[in-house]
Image (cartoon, rainbow, N blue to C red; front, side, top):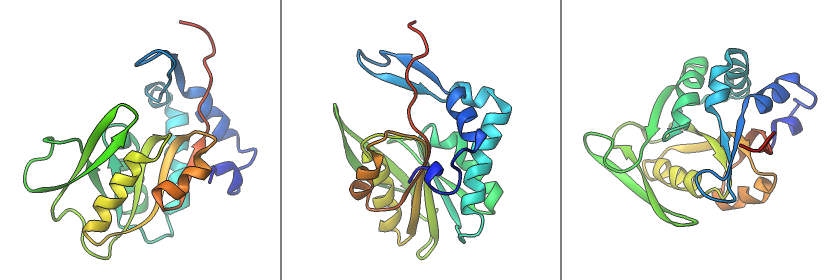
Length: 191
């Protein structure tokens, strides 16, 4: 569900968040319109508004785990976790976490990848959300859900700053509710 459909229709923060995201055409390959959230992070107000919207949504949902997907989920997850009084748990690419991990492979358009979670970071019965910057196909979020559910967590929802308009149909792919702030932007100018 898009934030606009959940009581934030006309909220000027959503427009400001969208405008703070830079679009880089043809990166990392021809035909991709890369949604660069690093410019959002440079805009203190837009970044704070992004975190505040997520905190407002999750504050009273008894969430104990905010799981951030590497790497851009790390930029939002810790602030959201602090705001709602939860712990932050990183979901990382292979061989980035020291100690014992569990892994989950997932398919990409151009191959496969993998996420890992520290054993013991999440306890059975904990309520979790998963945060990332963008959802397109849902493959990465699905891997995150599987990891958390394998250790007995209840994944309440997935949250992304940006989601393609077709994401409503993608909710079935990830099998969990999905909360998205804005749609991808088109390039303002050619680079």
